[in-house]
Amino acid sequence: MAIEIHWIRDDQSLAEHCRDWHQLPFVAVDTEFMRVDTFYPKAGLIQIGDGQRAFLIDPLLIGNWQPLADLLEDSGVVKVLHACSEDLEVLLRLTGKLPQPLFDTQLAAGYLNLGFSMGYSRLVQEVLGIELPKGETRSDWLQRPLSETQVSYAAEDAVHLAELFTALRPRLSDDKYAWVLEDGAELVAALRREVEPESLYRDVKLAWKLAPQQLAVLRELCAWREREARNRDVPRNRILKEHSLWPMAKSQPNNLSALAKIDEMHPRTIRQDGEFLIQLIKRAGSLPAEQWPAPLPEPLPIEAAGVLKQLRAIGQAEGERLGITPELMLRKKALEALLKSGYPNGPYQLPDSLRGWRRERMGQALLDNLAGAGETR
Image 1 (tube, rainbow, N blue to C red):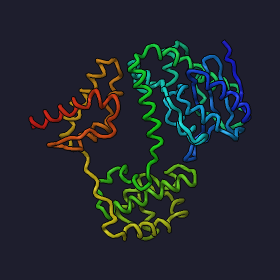
Image 2: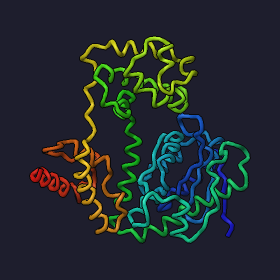
Image 3: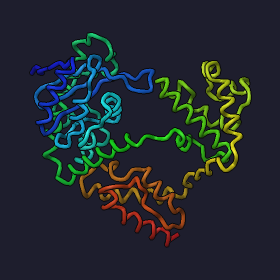
Image 4: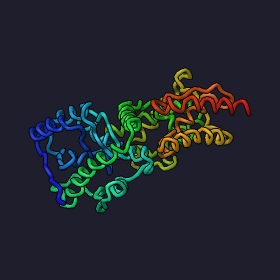
């Protein structure tokens, strides 16, 4: 059956359609974008599905995104997306707003125990019995005109995404539906929590091995790299390779020749920013001790693996009881944060990352398990 496609290529048309969409209980939202050599995604197409038709918005021709921003924030219209972390970045970049309430069909599949992290084509096949043609995701979405294959692919995505919501929603209990929306709200909140560039050093592999003075250098290198990537709109590794950060903070090269010997140091980086980096390292390395970061905690020891396994089992058992994919129950990072709060002898504190229904249903069981483990050690 041919899909009814409507193109939106000017501000007035977008505003008129957004007025109509405000009257609907839900809209499906998808994006096509390019991110080959940029920090930020470049939108090539925005697709909206209303349940019957596909609306294709050409972002290269739209100047006023306020009507779409208002729709995204309309709490009376559920926004349906799939595996949406990058789509959220595109929408935030274009409109300055993020969708709420947000229903992610990939999450919904997990709550129905259909599978974890299911790709869109596989979910459409599983739920709707439709085999989608091979994707056009790697094609050039900024080219004009778009090919017929691209247009067809984009329109099908919008229509089937709406059909997925219609099929999945009745299969979810009211509790599970609320949990899908809760997880969607958490995705949005995580993107709104803009990470401070000065805190990124904590995520560098083996950063815990560095002394506080070396951490001060690592902190400045990571912050500079992040800001430059944003300002120049290029990938972080184009500014400075990930694997170069730790050895630079450790050895603190003081000339270009020493800098060139750093792991994975690109000649372009030395040419463009070498002198600046030498000065940055010198300046950060000379900070007084009171301005050094605190030492980072060591990773959990190997002996903690058994305790983590016991904690994961609590989530798996609850997942089986509720008919939810086990991977959705307790995130590894949350369990590690819980364990680090008091290992090895306690007392333990539930981490902020364990929120909402997971905290309510499993928080006390986790603490009880740790208290029991402490008694048997």
